[in-house]
Image 1 (cartoon, rainbow, N blue to C red):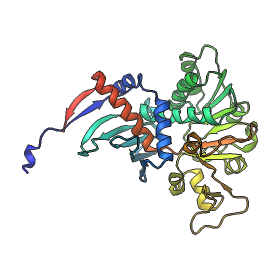
Image 2 (cartoon, one colour; image 1 turned 135 degrees about the vertical axis):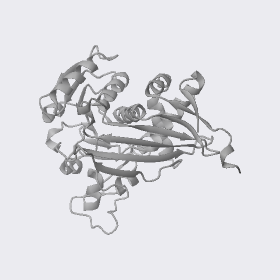
Image 3 (cartoon, one colour; image 1 turned 90 degrees about the vertical axis):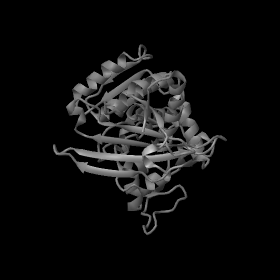
Image 4 (cartoon, rainbow, N blue to C red; image 1 turned 180 degrees about the horizontal axis):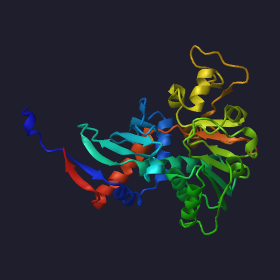
Length: 357
């Protein structure tokens, strides 16, 4: 073949504004729920993610994540794609979001690029959708008080979605190590749809923020746990989004611990649950320790996955007073599922730009 005369290969490019516009017609919570059900049924492909970390010239921690995935169920051609999300801890001080990247969809027949779109909005909203599903299925009945630890883009995405999906919500307590950021977030959240009957307050410290909350959502950048078990009231649901805010003692004391995908947690050496598994204090859902590791006295087992709860394979909360932890590592198949629906709406509405390779 004459490599200089390939036929044109077009794909749709969606900016953040295009993604947000197309997403108006997408039920992101249902898209995520369906992807979790498919994953629980073994109808997805979820390879290991690629991780690259470095220190920036200004001394900040930065990283790149490349996360491919595919959905193979529903009696339709597979949905194949990849999310790349990159972050630098110093970005907020530069006046820009901490994380940004692209989500790529491929034609399942030719493997050619089908669509390329801004990733941060999809990533934030599908993360918030996992939390919304956890609240729906694992929180106490009629939760009224939410605590958000960390007041960046993820906190605001959570507030916006939970105000729509948790009609019993009456109070949102915010905490951030930067008080001005917490105050700004409180002001923005108070103006969101659904916030008229919800009190938004800023706490002086993390313990004060969580002590009365029925739902606790850490969305921080910490790498060392600080939430102790006695900080949490009976019945609290902790949606452990940023993965390192709980102490090991809090995990061991919980009544139920659920993940989104055990293999991602098992193979990760950086985050709390992966470190606990390597240390022998956390066992897999089958009750076994890591190969070559001896289970320590007092080790606890991961109870299952959120997908198991959605499909009826796990009962979820078993006691109104137990602490439940949902630890969503973050699965690329969820981003791919949401991106697929956004792409369909963008195609129908003619959003974005048609580019060629």
